[in-house]
Length: 102
View (cartoon, rainbow, N blue to C red):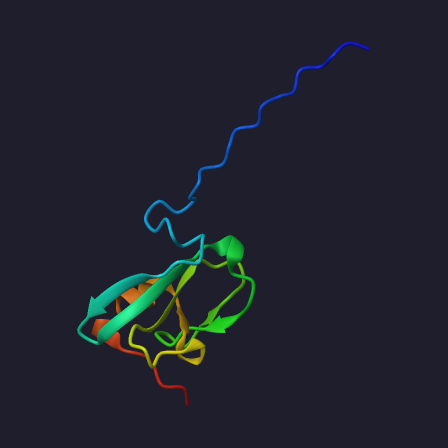
């Protein structure tokens, strides 16, 4: 049998989300807004495996849905302070604010 050359596979891009290169690596970016300083991480749909409730609209964020996770940037913020938001709800929070569950 002769030697069959190996087919080169195209390499994946180092970062699939160009707007937030740290998102796929779990990094957070800092955001300052009128409601405080936040650390925000983008969660790509492929990494969203649980159901969360968005505090902006009070609807579920289903598995496979890209979204953001945000928590206070100060030293008192902890894992318990993280909230999962639809991207649009996060960006509109200054106009709407979080909804209250009844």
